[in-house]
Image 1 (cartoon, rainbow, N blue to C red):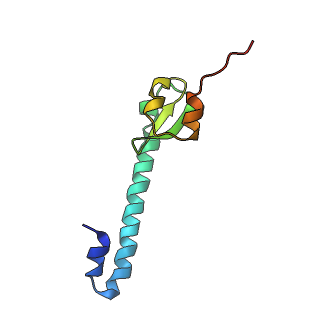
Image 2 (image 1 turned 180 degrees about the vertical axis):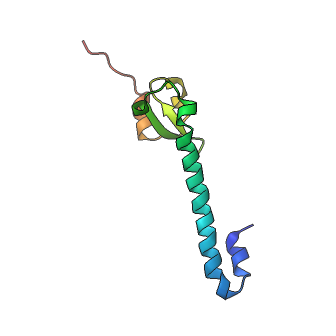
Length: 94
């Protein structure tokens, strides 16, 4: 259900407090998700150097990506300017 609909049915005195609590709950969930992402770096990429890892989005969800090792997965990621640059072929120098 829509949160604004539920809050609208609550007495005016409590609405402000409820909006604040909902905001805190949403912020808490976002921070927990981000913390779990940072905790997972050593589980998902144990042999990668930290300097080669980037946080990118895959289907809207944040994931760690090592552009050196996981080059075949670059096309599956949500496109941004970094990924477009990584997908360009590298010219050989003579």
